Amino acid sequence: MTTWNDRNKAVIEEFRTHGGQVQGWGSLILLTNIGAKTGEPRIIPLMRVDEGDRLIAVASKGGYPKHPDWYLNILAHPKVTVEVDSEKFETTARILTGQERERAFARAVEVFPPYAEYQKKTEREIPVIALERPSK
Image (cartoon, rainbow, N blue to C red):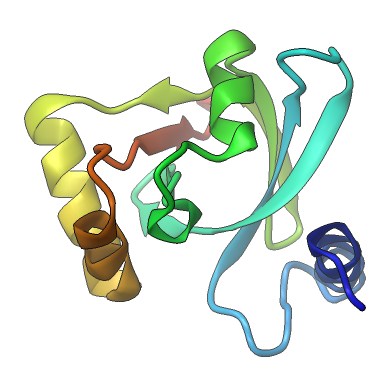
């Protein structure tokens, strides 16, 4: 039986081998975050929404009632590393609120319509996170 961890390892390997492309997936990033409890680095593949010089990640967890672990990790340790295509950069994850969150979530739904269904399935407001590229 394939576990989430096994599936994620395969996606991470394919992402890195093929310059950010993973067959059967949309646009992805790899987000390296620090475990809130362990202090150990964790890598998670996530759907992404391109928005100018920033990327948007959505902590949907498929509409489950609890936030995903990676989101809890960035609350504790907002400094993250992002891999997108063949680019890699460090940034501080920023949780969007208010109108900025609403606009970014609407854009995310345009890119990946199931996010709207995930929000309907849960009472929690699904967090939206901005990952800004460093200034050049």
